[in-house]
Image (cartoon, rainbow, N blue to C red; front, side):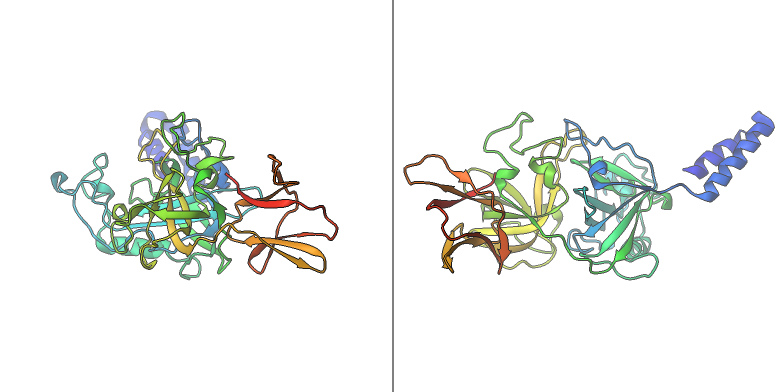
Length: 395
């Protein structure tokens, strides 16, 4: 962008005389010095208004540091496939595509961001169709190799690595502010992903139920998705993050496959309580479609399909599945103390008690459970009053 400003000033030099020449020199000096880097939080970068539309108004280049949630290649097929516009015959054929997600790790920060690029931007109807905004197969291969490796060491990047994204462009669509090339092959819009710490480790998935992100009734936005522009609750609270959705059953299984286009890898799951939710299969084998209740771990995404309405369209990109653990309490005695435990995967449940079976009010215990041998565990000291206990799911 600085070089475009320099060209403008230089072209007007003959009209403005020495003052314009001096300004051109100043702009050139600024261009050579390079723009200052702005470190950004994920929370700020993904902030939205009441319509779910981005409110971020920062400047480039901007950097975000977090952990890679996905391997390059598990979300989209980056195989080179140059297709020309050809008078509209190639419309919307983007050829190879590349995408990863990165989640915040800094204390006080929250959220995640998508990094995306495609080969044939020139096949978007609103882009130039002279070939300048599409990569040849060779150029695309080089571009993919560039973003898949740390620019300093050349080391390949993998999920679980701590990285810094340097963005020179981004676009808002579908409910998320996405780091990308702004549909341009101009290197000025390139983003880079630099390795900070190899094998830093994936964040523990936050366990949720569909009740946390979906309603059984249409909301004020006209959708079943629970939307909160403050991002304190609902789908926005987990957007771009690694989560585990518990207690799902597949309603449709046609999209439970691999090596298919993104749109052909969708299935629908339900919690059995009237809520349904889309799941996206990765480009690797998760095994046969589970016939019974299961938990799905992956990246919580949003694709509303709109540039002006980001209040709906939440979905889960699935990376792992496991049979759902039953919400059953185990109570045992240990040296007179009562040891109450339940499966660790059910972190979105809370322990409640009441004094008698006839009582109608349940009280949530303030004792924070400890994870012991994979189980959430609460120990009640000897002599504690007799009570009745249950597990209650947190909405």
